[in-house]
Image 1 (tube, each protein chain N blue to C red):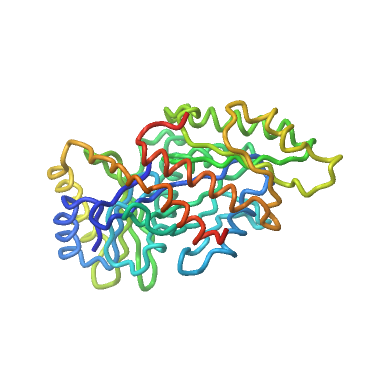
Image 2: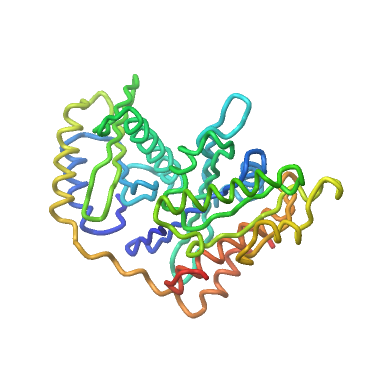
Length: 200
Length: 153
């Protein structure tokens, strides 16, 4: 849940990048880290295995600026995608204000995307959160791969995006769609805070 | 010192004065900062809170798997600085304290006054939740400008 510091006039929101293993969650954060001015970001922390697979989470704090007189900060987290790390995924998901679901556009990863989305829904429900009440956006990564290997933006939407929430095609390695996605989830989370009601 | 709500300040100040701790961070169980003393850069505070909350959460989960009721506190002893991590319950929910201290004090002293701070926080915490602010009418314009400034598009 967003924390509001009235004395210092600060808002802090927690955004979690979710999705199957190797879909590009860490790559999103690495790209953001490399492109945001140093004065607006903290250190990027990666708790990873020796082969650079996310073990617990990646974490990147960002300062957005002043909105309605409140200094607004984001905490970006990723979860480990591999199915056997579900215990740590649940921990990272606690208190999330918004979720970016990073799907892998490769046709052969279709089932992995569905399984991960179902897992997100289950883990939220276990914490008493209905996914329909939480700001969520989709990012369909690896859209730069040859067309015969991937599903298109529309096909990914048909497969995953039942609620027609905002979705973005991306090539996170080269930055395409990374900021658009972050902008999309930021808007949803902050608008929800402004209105004070759930996002439909 | 910075605190999210004023009622946290007095117990935290007392703890700092009595325990000799160098840095102290109070956070929610999801890693959101409630109060802090001694950290110089706000973005580093968030990182410390995220890591502290993760350590406590994973330790509690480990305890649950082992059939233990949970661990009261974790202490990491370093040569120049040590660190105490402990979760506790307040009327505002479950919080975590992260305390960094040096050889000028001891883990026993820090724990003693930490426990006292927890009791004081429980005693002075208001029962009602703070109101979430309505953001201004020009919220969307300012949001757009901030996003453009940060993301450069």
